[in-house]
Image 1 (tube, rainbow, N blue to C red):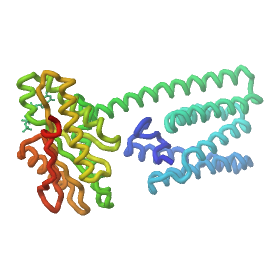
Image 2 (image 1 turned 30 degrees about the vertical axis):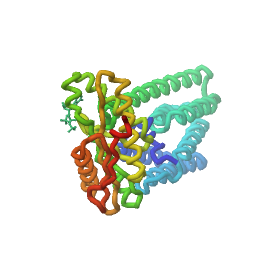
Image 3 (image 1 turned 120 degrees about the horizontal axis):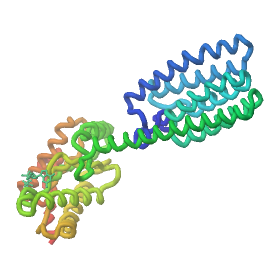
Image 4 (image 1 turned 180 degrees about the horizontal axis):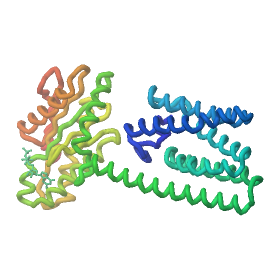
Length: 354
Ligand SMILES: Nc1nc2c(ncn2[C@@H]2O[C@H](COP(=O)(O)OP(=O)(O)OP(=O)(O)O)[C@@H](O)[C@H]2O)c(=O)[nH]1
């Protein structure tokens, strides 16, 4: 089960990031305990044992779930058991206390919209509204129940609309803050976190590669054909790199005509083949998108991770391999393996392209 499902998934519909999620969960837990614990004790005291028990079970399930997320980094029960127990408690409470207890339904349905994934929130709220109305019917005029339902529907619709708008806004902001505006590649700020994750994986002997990529003589493209054509070349290069990578491979634009491709679980030999193909495709692809440009080639330096190696050194090895590729005449891919600091694995793309 997804550990973030309680407060939405940060990848798609999350309303809270990993840091605020912790605070929000703790806050929810405290408020719930402060509100429902006295209520459940009161119900035991006045003899409403079943209601007291349901409320207590709800609180307990919430404590277990929040503890699992915050301390153990995983779901123990999931959000469904607390949600179910809360819904049962609401309906039971209306059944016992009548109209007075219906006031609780408003904050509960609103909180559900905020905290639970969209589809589940709609389903749960639909069920709560319907069963609460049925439970309230014997205690009040049917017209009052109708007003109760309408007010709840109004409340839930507004909450859903606002949350959806905030989610979309948040997704846009998150995209803008992580991506390069020209190409859509990840920006430099995202690199550190991704490299640390890759380096952690490398420690577990899941070797992977990084490729430092640079467009050859890009300044000349700008000088001869203008900045707009230069932009078009950069966009085409990114598009072609993305076309030949898997979803899990991450492409970063470090600035200007420099890129870093972080492969997922890929050995140097495979990375070399992929980069060679990309080099060939770029040479062909640019002719189609920017016919005025004679030719565009890439120089690439690849370094495979080594268990125990410092992150900085890994990146530096890729940079050095790129430097070597440039100095060996550009339009080629160099692999830097640790045994031979400057590998001889050079593929000259000039011969394969023409
Ligand atoms: N069109 C365009 N040009 C850019 C952008 N960012 C940086 N540049 C230009 O990219 C060029 C990079 O040139 P250099 O770093 O000298 O590299 P180069 O000409 O490719 O030379 P080598 O890498 O040695 O082959 C500079 O002229 C920058 O002005 C951009 O977003 N769009």
